[in-house]
Structures are given as C-alpha cells and as structure tokens.
Image (cartoon, rainbow over all chains, first blue to last red; front, side, top):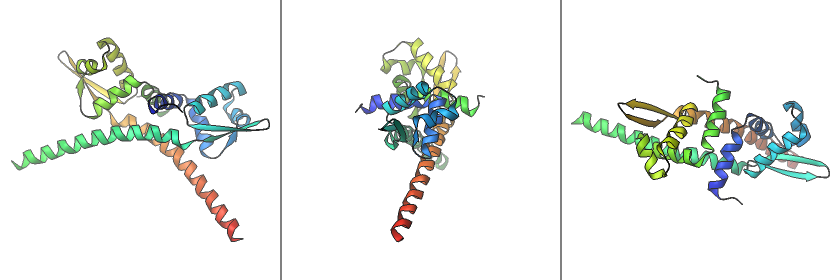
Length: 110
Length: 110
C-alpha cells in the first residue's frame, strides 16, 4: 500500500485527465466492465485499460476479473484522501478569516 | 476565463504536485510573498514562480505585485470546482448504495 503522500500525488494526477474523470463518473453509477467503458468513450480497449490502471494504482478504482471480463468499481478511500486534504486547507483559511473578523470587531469596539 | 471543463483539469493537475500542495498549505494560513515561499521549500525563486504560475492559471491562487514584491493568496473558487466534482461523484455512488439497500430490504420482506 502506498504512503498517503504518494497516494495523494497519484489521486490528483489521476483526476487531472478528462477521460479518467469520465470513467470515474460512469463508475459512480455502478460497476462496469472495461469493454463497456470503452464504447461511449470512443477510445481503444488498450487506452481504457491504461486509464483504469492509473485509477487503480491511485486507489480510486478497483477491478476484478471473472473469466475474460474485468469489472471496474469505485473505491471510495481514494476520494477521501483528496477530500481530506482540501478540507484541511479550507479549515486553515476559514480559521484565519474568522480571526481577522474577530480582530476587526475588536478594533470597532475600541 | 477558462470553461469549467478546462479549469477542473488544471485544478487537479496543479494539486498533483507535492511542492504546489506545500505552497497551497502555506497560503491557507495567510498571504505570503514569492520570496518567502521559496525559503522553506529549498528551491529556487524561478522554480517557485513557475509553480505559483501553474496554481494561478488553475484558479487556486492569485497574486498581486506591489513594487518589487509579489504576494500570493488562496483563491477559494478553484477548490470549489474540485470539491463539487468529487461531491457529485460521491452523491451518485451513495444514491446507488441506498437503492441497493432498499432492494435488499424489500427482498427480505418478501
């Protein structure tokens, strides 16, 4: 399992590509086989497989092979890593804005 | 102004780099000049400027120049684009899991 530091690099990198985001959007509605993912995207099976592999390595998607069919599903943990990082930053700047508002209120009272 | 589609590519791409995330973490606590950003990161001023430019183009950071000092601040709108996209995906898979739970409950009742 990659460290969180490595993982978060992979997560954001993976989501920076519109085809990979289209795959994630599709999988959010339910598991889909690699060949069914390829059709609406109008790209080759090999290209889809490559994108799925990037998503799998980043922890956003997992795949299972049954016979000749590889089925892809969403892996919520990868999204939590990205959400947590954004949340932490947002908390930091909101705390700062709150402090500024308090200082402003105090200076108004003086 | 870039379209949301372009913007979200830039946002996730920008956040996929650990130095750029370190810059964002620092700026979350308050505005900082480019030269003060460079010091703890132990990279050249030119490299910091390049990272800041990527963050500015993606809408995550804005900069203002006063005399010879360029000051960087967080731009919350860029984060909202990323948060909204993740939220939409999460809503889709949570709705699906709710429907599955309902179906399971119904089949238990039969």
